[in-house]
Image (cartoon, rainbow, N blue to C red; front, side, top):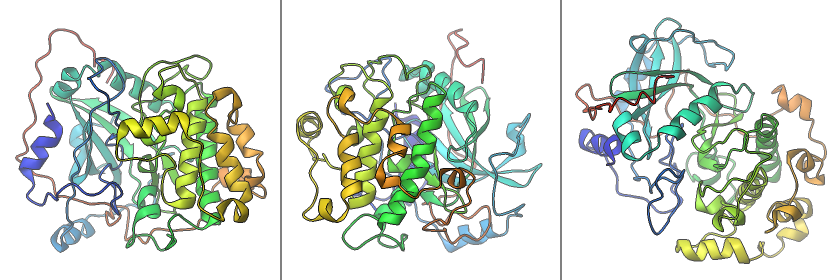
Length: 410
C-alpha cells in the first residue's frame, strides 16, 4: 500500500538504489516521517510504521535556473508569520524535497506573500489503509499549538477529497544529519567522525531548549534523531515531524512502541511503559552521535541492537572520556538503563557542567554565534536537499469515505 512512495518512483526517472545506513544526505526530508520499528508482525493502531523506501533524486542545472528565477520575498521565512485562511490554490508547487513512509514533502511558494513554505502531502487512502487516522489527527493537534524558536512552525492544515496537507515553515539549511555525516556538504565534520565540541554544545543546547518547551507543554516527543532536526537559513536547528508526539504524556506511562530503534529507550524496547525520560535517553544517543559520528548501540541486526540497548553499557573510544570528561559524563547519565537512575529532565541536563558557559537566554533569543551558516542563494534555495521537479500528471490514489468523517478538523 505504499501509494505515496510508489507513485513517485513511477513518475521520476532519477531514482537511485538504496544507500548504506549513513548516506551523506538523508532521504527523510522536512517532515516526511521515516521513523521505523522492526517488529515480527504489524501492529495495528500502533505508532510504528514500516521501513521507508530509500530514494534519492538529483538536482539538475535546469531545475536550479527555474528556482532561481522565482521571486523571493526575503531570505528568512520567520515562524512569526501568520498564514491565515490559506487556500490550496494559493500555493505554487515548485518540486519535491523528500519522500517518507507517510507522505511527500514539497516546496511551494505562497503566492499572496511570495514566501517559501514546505507542504507535507499525505494520502487519505494510505492513512486509512494503515489505520493511522488517530495519529495524524494527534500530530495536527500537537503541532499547531507549538511556537518556539527551535520548533518548526506548522502554519495551517488543509485537505481535499484525496489528501491531507500540512503547511510548514520551510527550513532551507537542510538536516543536521547532513552536517554530521556528509563528506561534501559539511565543512565542520571531523575526519574522525562527529563535530567539534563547541558545535556539539551549540546544537545540543538548542535541542535541550526545544525538549524543555515540549515537556513543559505536557508533550513527549518520542522521535528525536538527526533527520528530524533541520537548520534554518541562519544555521539554527529546529525540531520537526510530530507524528509520534503525545500530549499529556509527561506524567503518564505510555506503552506504545514507536520511534527509530537506534534512539529507543530500553523501556520502549521492552514495552514496560515510558514517559518523558524516554526523550532524555534519545537525547543521550543523539549527543553521542554528535560527538562521535555514530550511535552507541547500533547493529545491523535489529534484535541484537535491541539487546544492546537493554543490556550493554555505553562505551566510548579510547581517550574520549579523558579528553571530554563532561560530555562523556552527561551521555552516561542520559543513557542509564533504568529511568529512575537517568537524568530526570531537561532542567537537570541544563545544569550539567557540559553546558557551563552557555548563555541560555541569549541562545533562546538567537543571539549567539552559530558553528555553521548554510551558504544559500535566497529563500527558495534547495541545494541542501535532494530535489526533484513536480510532475503535473502525477497520480493520486482516490479516497472513498466510508462515512466516518475522521478528517473533519483538517
